[in-house]
Image (tube, rainbow, N blue to C red; front, side, top):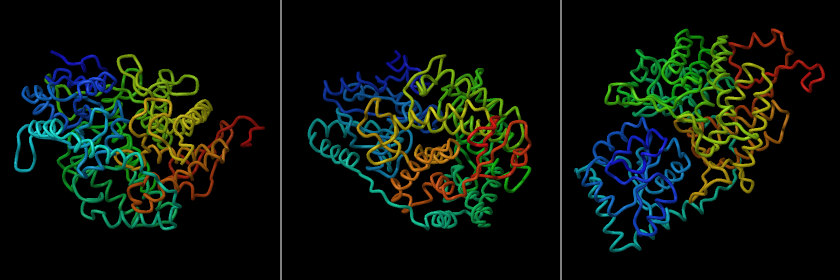
Length: 552
């Protein structure tokens, strides 16, 4: 008999609708039950194309004995991290207080008042020499709760206090922060197969973005060497799907082989950008061909009939041997895709790519844009849902800026200006600076974090700093550049300590350090044509038809 997830829209939650576990979606009903019955909460977070989430669903969450014990002693909540990134980020921060081994599925246990006290990722069904089986773990936790609840309550309160009392002191960036980041990348560079560090290896576009910009300003040739070596080996590794096109999310070997076979929209649009920029500098035909291949993969596999883009292609085939597509249309991911298609269309002089970006953007505006704000975060089954997050605003603003740069259509810059005002009103921390992850006017969780670490995708604060600098120059609003500076100082301590973890933020720092360069041209001139296939990472372009314009 289906559980409560059967009424949800998320593809990931629907994958668990037939589990024997009495799953609840995140919401008041689940927490009311936990408080009323004084039960611990299992919060299990994953996403629809996650290999280890599938594995645990098959082995553990389909097991009748496990389900029986969970249903009797716990309140079980399933969350799609792509649908509720705020919940995921909050409890991922909590998990990092307890363990270095974090990821998805994230299985975190809470007291009835939502405070975390124990965490893990994948658990096997049975005990083994390395790990407790999931049922054994459940029994231990429940017995501890029934016999000695104060131990769990004390632990949860300690973690909660750490999360809520953590205050950042503003710190100016060191003069050496950029060269320190480059040194760390050089130190961890894999000179045999490219990339950085050991397996598993993720293709992180912000590493390429930073190295290319550092090379552009300082002409460090080893930075360019690392770019070329990395992109060449990624291209020839199994992480690159040479049959269907596109890139898988990560590889399990140093040589970029034996990948996990999910393909994410964000991986592919970011890698298309990375190969595009590298082509502009290095001019390898294989890089240009890769941009075309990846964008055509996205159009063939992840494009909706409305011209927007789906979130991911699954790592496992479904029962009828068809590849599962997560058909959530996300504002943030579509903003990223719009940026990539607009950039490629402009740089490669392919009008079709610009048209793709324009069509996707216009669809998103029609569905999500009302009264100078984003009304939701996702679209599925012809309906929008879930309040918009900072990541939606940040990435969609990026898409609008790139689309304006590709088309010179004033409406995209005007909407960007309006959305940015709403964005700052809803997400800017007026007390200590920086961007909150969810709106000050929406549901408040145990904390409202400020995402800054540049992981699989650049963080909200990194993208926001870049957007603010570019909009400051496009709109002639120096106060926006000042806010970007406040973001730098708000996170200065982290960036000074570990600069290679914040490479997209450092791209914004490089932008801020660069000479302000804006090219202004009137319509129907060829002035801008010569810049199409040049790498000009710190240049903005304005097109005007008005002789009395502020730009004339």
